Image (cartoon, rainbow, N blue to C red; front, side):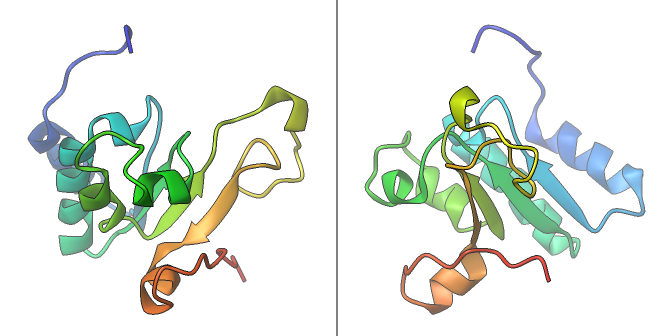
Length: 126
């Protein structure tokens, strides 16, 4: 919360556009759900350019749906393809967890969840 630098979404989108050879973008720490409008704008830009969007958050999917995350979180959630949810927990750290650091975190396929009326669908990389 007290680190990093301030950058507007348009600048980030410009960097993404000029990067080339991308098939997706990952939104991660600090937690994108603390800046949901800006993160959603970046995610929309990515989708408009044919890129998939992954997002890491310390919130759980259920917490976001329940409104526990900051206002505007649903706007961002609607723009994300795969959500890696839950806080990293040192005591559950595992190098065997695909794309995540601790076993309590989930890879959630949000496109599948939307089709399944909110039921949690775990992402299958195969």
